[in-house]
Image 1 (cartoon, rainbow, N blue to C red):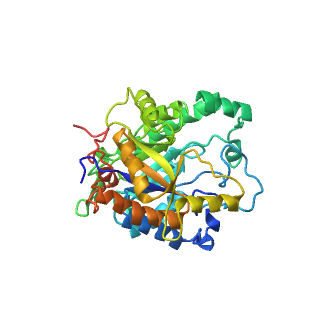
Image 2 (spheres, rainbow, N blue to C red):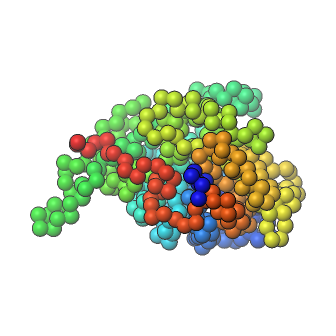
Image 3 (cartoon, rainbow, N blue to C red):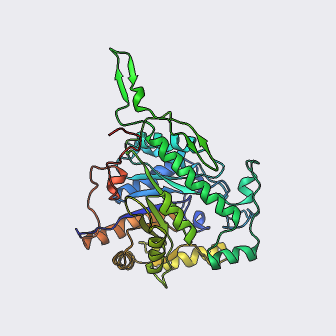
Length: 402
């Protein structure tokens, strides 16, 4: 195997990332909200020896980004809770990482801490968390606790052009940094070995190894300790999707791994530079950078390009995405991943255009192509998700006495 083997995960979102994916010939639209459908997808990913699956979620129904939900009936406009999907998959998988999306906005960090720690227990050390910020008025209206104003089209164009967030969105990312900090402190609020379980002395815990976190910030006041013992990984893997400088800064402050979206035209070099600048004052392990790609791979039945064209025809519009779109053979995709890896990308997260077609092609075509080049594993190591991703597996507890 190559000295620096590729890291490879997939992002799962319902029937797939193309809005017409549910209408593809092999899709299973009647099963999208069943446990069996998700079990089959993740089993395929695990057969392909992938590092992890992320499970998409938000506090709004799926639909066009940065726009209110419309009345369209030709797209899937419903979803299951990502964390609960991961919880159902944890006991029936053995090696693959499970990273649900959980929104910080409108969600208490104490609840997030407990949920992800529990997932780390039920998965035996394979849990992660994709942090998401909810900046839309539509989502805020579900809760009625704060007033959020959507940007006008002109304001949104300015955000894209300058990368500068409006004041309320800036505050949401500051809140998210605090939320992650609270969650991480709660994970450390039980020292390793705090559970004694000594029946003879009637002591289940060593109270001296439980700690109040006493967090006081602009957005949260949390005393702690957690009600769940420290997770098996110590600190489950925290990830974030980022497209702009401020969000790179958020990832550098709060996450272990950031998903970025280079274009095919320009590649990842400039984004890698921006992420490095954003993390210049980061302490500890470097932030890992994974590039996202939406993929439509060649199959036994058709080429990836023809499949994409057919889906575009079904939806009546050309598919676009925040991430680069790849349509072609597994060998050509392997070339692209190798080239970007040589430029400094730490890993890749592939978004299957049609889940039931492209995920098997990733596992059955792309992975063997990478293995043939010696750039991907041929078996899983006996490791936690942190170990699988090359992160430190011994995470010091900030509250433990030396």
